[in-house]
Amino acid sequence: MRNLLLDGLVVLNRPEQFQLLEDAIDVFTPSPSVTRLLVRGSLAAGTADRLSNIDIVVGVVDDDYVAFVSVLDALMMAELHAIMPGWRDTDVGDLGGLGYVFLVACQERLRQLDIYAVPESILDQNVVSARPVFTRAGIDVSLSSREAMAFVTRTAAEARTCGELLIEIMVQGFLIRKRIIRRQRFAAYHETHVFNSAVKNLVKAALAPDSRDRGWHNLHTEIGSTPMGKRCLADLDALVSGPAVPTIESLDRGIGAAIALAERAAPEAVEKLRKSIDAYLEYMELLRPL
Image 1 (cartoon, one colour):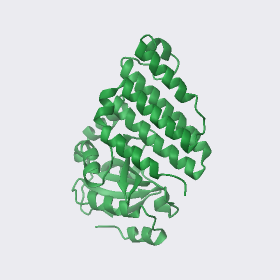
Image 2 (cartoon, helix red, strand yellow):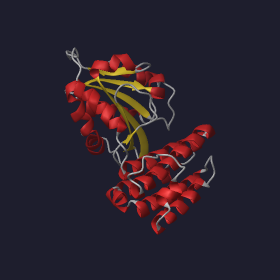
Image 3 (cartoon, one colour):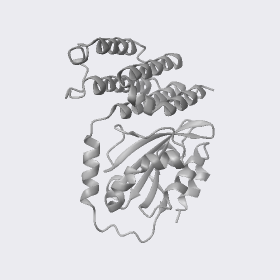
């Protein structure tokens, strides 16, 4: 049953994106694999603004964890109108599971919905400062699943594909745009570096997939030996030469340049995400300062 604290969240604050929270609760709670839902961040604290993300921790029966994470993208896209698969979040604190950032179309806007899935057996050990909004009665969590823990470790260590890196680029572009609107210059500076690094990683994944160097030092030797590589490095140089703290206009140019670079280096990845990219660019045009 839903925890009455959900009603308390309504009393504290009713931002526009609260409807998305209610929709997410309605999608997740019918599954017997879901044991608990907890809300974190500004929405739980009652300090959310119109740009705030929704941050949900999902407790999952250990034996069902692998299957749950494996269908999460499809579920989010089919039921909650995510415009693309989720970005596996590398910035979120370690709660013992896997975190994903989804960009969701809701109320004619693009919203950020963060889903962190945690095996139920370790949920209480790791999650703090969260408000429970759903708890399933009668769940036996006395035994943990080694398979779930191994899956988390294995997934967290996997190298990103070109498609996953393109999704990261778009998510980071969305985050930077929110920072610019909020005038959060330091955060925008940090996320611009992450954005540029994701573009670099995509180029390396496409043109030097066997490289073990994930840094910036050997790009010319690993990528610049072919005409394609030289062109990509020139485009990457132009991208990183933009302002460290972007404006809306320079961010738009950077996103366009990053997608064009991805189309050159990894055309198959771009083609698979073509509809998502088109929807993303359309919604980003609507995300502007009031």
